[in-house]
Each structure stands twice: as C-alpha cells, then as structure tokens.
Amino acid sequence: MQFTPEILPNLINTVAEVIEKNSEEVTALDQAIGDGDHVINLQRGIGALLEQSAELAELKWTQAIQKIGMTLLSTMGGASGSLFGTLFISMAKAKNDNNILNQHELSVIYALGVEAVKKRGKSDVGEKTMLDVLIPVAECFKKDVDASVEFPKLLENICLTAEKGMESTRDMIATKGRASYMEEKSLGHIDAGARTSQLMICAIADVIGTEKK
Ligand code: ADP
Ligand code: MG
Image (cartoon, rainbow, N blue to C red; front, side):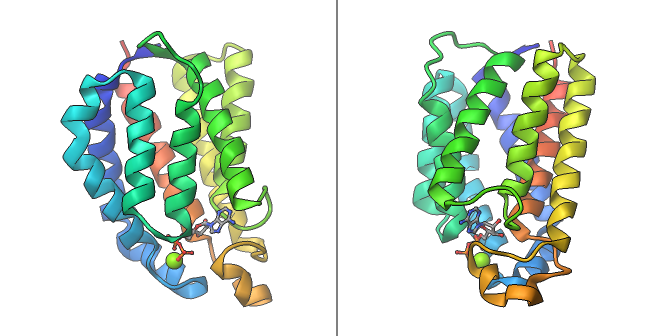
C-alpha cells in the first residue's frame, strides 16, 4: 500500500463532507460542555484546505503536510486549531525524502504528530479530549503494522479503535480544555474534538482503502 499527495484533494473533500453531515451533532456536543464553536473552527480550516487542495496535490509529502498544518493553525482558532495544526506540522518534521508513503512510514509519522499534540495540550489519554481518539489510534496503527496485518483489516481496526476512543469520552470527567470547567457535569457527554477526530480518521481510512493501488 503506497500513496502520493495526489490523494489529498479526495481526502480533503471527503473530510469536508463528513464534518458537514455531522455538524449539528458536533455543535450540540460542544454546546453541552464547551462554547459550541468547534465545528465552525474546524470548517474554517477545512474550507481553507479545500481552496488549496489542487496546490497541495502537487507538493511533496513533507511540504504538503507542513502546509496543511500551517493552514489549520492560521485559520482555525480555538484550542483545536493549535492542536490539529501541531499534529500536522510535527508530522512534517519527520524526514521523508521519498514522495511515496507506505503504511509503516505513515504510522511512524502519525505517532510523532500525536506525541507533539500531547505536549502542546499538556494532556494524555483519559482527559476527555481528541487525544482519547488520537492516542489509541496511534497505538493500534503501530501494533497492526508491526504484526503485518492485512491493509483492509488494519484500516478497519483503526476506525473501530477511533469509535471506541470517541465513545469512551462519554464516561470521563474533563480535566483539560473548556469542558474541564464543568467538572462532574461533563460526565455523560461525548467530547466534540474526539467525535470530529473519529469522523475524520474513519473517513480517511475509507478513502485510503478505496484508492488502494
Ligand atoms: P475551544 O475549546 O477553544 O472552544 P474548540 O471548540 O475548537 O476550541 O475545540 C475543543 C476541543 O479541543 C475539545 O473538544 C477537545 O477535544 C480539544 N482540546 C481542548 N483542550 C485540549 C487539550 N489541552 N489537549 C487536547 N485536546 C484539547
Ligand atoms: Mg469550543
């Protein structure tokens, strides 16, 4: 399984669609324990990426991922803007001179990005944030790549892990971000950033699975 940045326009379109389709639900989640702007922030970033998508497809992976991170950082705003920005900018720091990514390289790069989000957010698993999806997905990705799990199965495992992580935030008390002001009242609600992370990861897995060469 190998892919080049030519896959990016399709990926960005699919992510835009899945976020649009679920926007009301995500807004309600962020209204319940945050300030309700998460989808608006995210859609501002995705809108900027849609405008750049033809240009991104022409770049090398390192430059494309770096540009995605810079665009999210400069357009999104909110806590999630700096965290999603950090995710991509840190992924781009991994040297990848080869312009074709395979699943092993992607799992290593993605794990570096997630580590940087943990540092930036001073946060870890169990705090009711996007990291409750991002971290288990990084672990599952590495485990399946190391075990040479067949690619379609690996993608399915990643999406299932993302769903499980997202669901797990419902029974957590938030200790980071705006939701932490709610203390115990944050119980019973899924974290908005965990939900959008899961939606995007499952959508990306779907596109990668269908486009496989
Ligand atoms: P804001 O909280 O500034 O309104 P958003 O609504 O766009 O920003 O994003 C909120 C999401 O960001 C939360 O649902 C959570 O997943 C994530 N988040 C907030 N703070 C942190 C943190 N310190 N570490 C990890 N993720 C965080
Ligand atoms: Mg918010």
